[in-house]
Length: 92
Image (cartoon, rainbow, N blue to C red):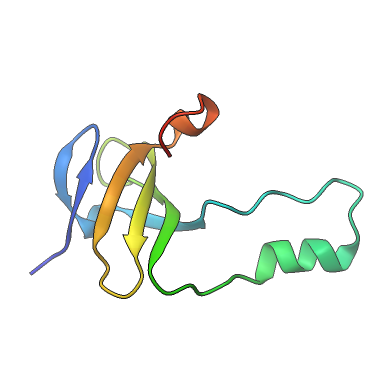
């Protein structure tokens, strides 16, 4: 059985309609930062257990960017919001 994701625009949809694009909380280094800092930012990531926030693209549906809170142990999603709310200081 397919996992379901509750898109705020399309409702419950199969997970296969989405593309995962990485974790949310990685601020970009400054433009003049050292090459090693940029290497860490681009290539190295933590692999946390438990709740994790990620960018997902609803490529098979409304084509909106979403922020999912997903448990990395159970793959359950607890919150899904439109990524545009991040700029507005919303709930993501």
